[in-house]
Length: 98
Image (cartoon, rainbow, N blue to C red; front, top):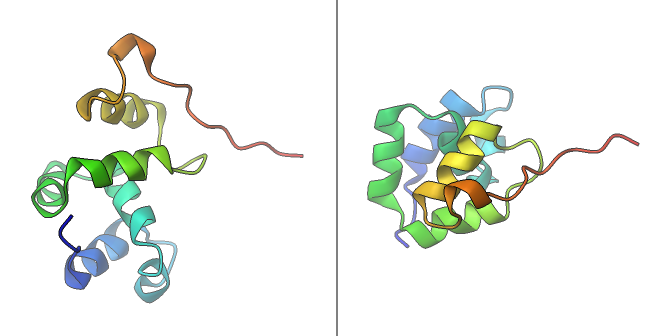
């Protein structure tokens, strides 16, 4: 995997992790990448694919916490990355409130 450029991560942090200061978001690069995978626009996803390999994206998907992906993106990325067949996508993780 090529390391993600800090400048690109900072841009995405500002755009996709709007509720945090970019410096705070940069401490969690996988979270930024998950947000690009979940709600990123076409151009940002193309850039992401040019910067990282599929193994890294699979790792981000597998290690995602509950709430990081919506159902549509969860299913798309499992299928797109060859992790699951369309009818065998694992259930989306849910947050539990005690």
